[in-house]
Amino acid sequence: MPELRSARRGVVIVFFVYGAVLATWVSRIPLIKQELGLDTAELSVALLGSPIGLITAMQFVSRLVERWTSAVVVRWAAVAASVSMVLPSLAWNLPSLAVALFLLGFSLGSLDIAMNTQAVAIERGYGRPIMSGIHGMYSVGVLIGAGVGALAAHAELDPLVHFSAAAFVLGASGVVASRSLLGAEADTEHAPDDTDRPLRLLSHPGLIALGVIAFCCFFAEGAVDDWSGVYLHEEQGASLGIAPLAAAACGAGMAIGRFGGDAVIARFGRPATLWRSALVAGFGMTLAVLAPSPGVAIAAYFVLGLGVATIVPIAFTLAGTAPGVRPAWAISRVTTLGYAGLFASPPVVGLVAQATNLAVALAIPAVLLLLIVPLSRATRG
Image (cartoon, rainbow, N blue to C red; front, side):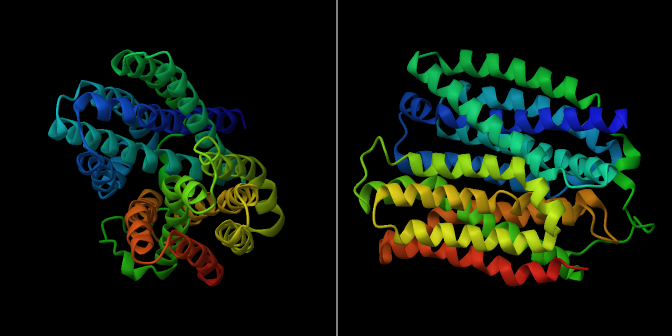
């Protein structure tokens, strides 16, 4: 149907915008840290603003979706995220940077729930898996945002100029894309009749299982982003130029896996794809830890990326189509648990590595990924 095809194109652009906004800000963190004269501990405190804002938004954004539709929330959240991206470049001290990042996290959290609610509705209309490919555009946005950020940093472009130009392009793209999204009927198709009944996550064990699955997957992603390069450099002896290729390989594997993931899901079904993907991801993470050389470790991180690629898209789809609950509410709860893993991962891995060694610490995400295999059984039915 033309309406569905148009909505799919629109939501793909929105996912791209999300990834590009996030990567644009992250690409200039070193310079902003330097300009504000922050040490590592102070920067860590400031960076807490973003996850706090993200988690805060996820607690009530489902109500905004129910009141104004996911299409409207996507439109305003895309604009808010683009504008908020500029704020860190205007910060003058630690508190102002923390506030700026709280606002950025809040707007990104709102956009996350709304765009995934919309994507679930579009996939439901298609009657076949398309969510993995939609999430693939997030990966593309991250890659392009990071690439442009690297060029801007190399050219010594002022972050305010860089962020302002990116905000205009990405914000405008989000507004235009949101006009083609599906309306209110898409958000409420699977909502229960008694919409005034209080919703409690503990009453829905299937959603809890999906949340734990998302937690395990995001924990592994966080460990790769923050510690894979350190592991290759300090434990494997890779040079500083080679070490970042671990995270890059994982990102490349994830992008490829997401664009090919819909065909796999259509072939095996979502629960079966979940446990197969978890096995691949767990194998990749285990091989990365036990690798005899940096080259083998980098290849293992690519395998890890292929494995985790479809896990989160499947979890969001299953949450958004869970019976008896409103899609936006279910997605927000699963997302909250998932992001808890992303935020917990860096300090947990760091503390365990301090007490033992980094190889032992990186075995934790390998175990968590394999935990998804039995958890996938709770998603059936």
